[in-house]
Image 1 (cartoon, rainbow, N blue to C red):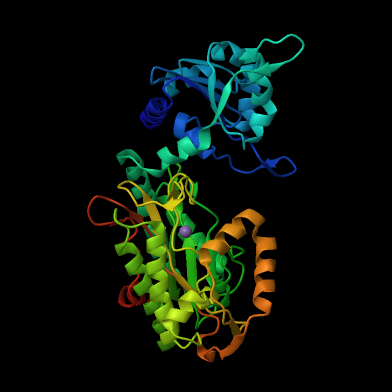
Image 2: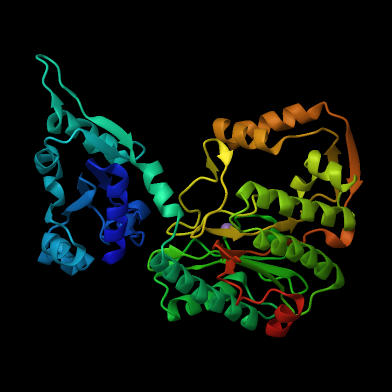
Length: 473
Ligand SMILES: [Mn+2]
């Protein structure tokens, strides 16, 4: 378990002296006594690699050195017969490098002993287990002894930002895992393109693709597969996958394998019958153009905000050329008319989580990319079938302000406010070319930032018009 040991050493160097309190994931039930497949919490995995549910960890840091203490489910022949093997405290010591390991139930009684004399505590206040265990525990573990009162003299530090900063930069072994996840994912997308035929159902294509993922060693999916044919491609998180494919339409697949806990994230859009129509090809070519600009910009000279600005500029020009917007490129950008067709970000960090840890800002300013950061690049154009005429507001808008408000108020409230503000602005009605309605295209690859040129981990999945038509036919 070298990777988590390395990660503990790294966090120890940041902390110096103190203790980290960490809680693993629990079994979640789906219906009655049927549980979802267990997948460990990503932060817990990052620092311990412990694979079982119901576990706590304490990492004691002394003079920049980390010592791991694990609290895990005990061996129990009867339970293991029903639920599966357990490693137990012995396994935690022998295989996972714990100095000492105890039973899960012993956390509250034994933690005070481990923490005695330590005043700097790093924990995750957002975790329900913090409320359940740690809040009380520190009063007894690190007490300020005042007659008649019970409170702690511990200094609580937020663990998540520290961990997120570490997780943001991938080391060579993590990149190796990501690369495997990406290689497997590429093969799955290729199978989907090869087997898709007219009159199939979306779930049949999904099944073939996922079979390839599992055949090649994926432990699970990175996220539920989106297999969206025809109009469904305009629904960003469509994942019911129950419809019959539109034989003359496109199919958008956003799906990925997870390998050693690392997730890939790939989208390809291809024609069901193997041949793009002229208009499909026109829109596809524009999305591909923007995506290639985005990928080229994954360098140490750029921020994620720069990258988004460059793809928005490209997409906006495309929207003008395709006749989808009423004004010129400048207005399409400043009045955010592009947002009708490209309503999401250009990319996000990728790693243990498909939307991985880390910010795109540092000290409230966009941060430049660094070698070892991994991001998706995934512009799209979605021309919703139910909007043959769009009323565009003639109002300058600031995407940054909108984003911040959506964060602070929540989507539901913020979008309501947006439409209220827009209500009084002058507007212009614009007819969408009929043959473009219902086309939804996204192309997504996973890109590693390096000192030199960006590395595209998913370049193997066909994406030029010729390559896509070749594999689909
Ligand atoms: Mn993505």
